[in-house]
Length: 56
Image (cartoon, rainbow, N blue to C red; front, side, top):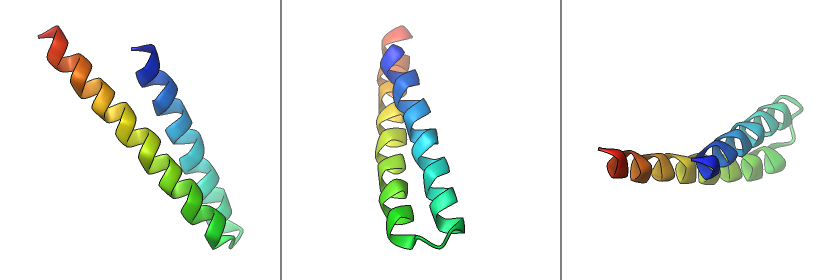
């Protein structure tokens, strides 16, 4: 479960960085941070699904 929380928090941090970069009109950085955010959040979701299947 520790990996899930770590990836979830990092995904949210990258999502926040993407939003700040978009507001400051730095679109290339915003796209990079959004992509990193999607990767981390997707990884957290897949870890959560795998752990959920193992519990029940």
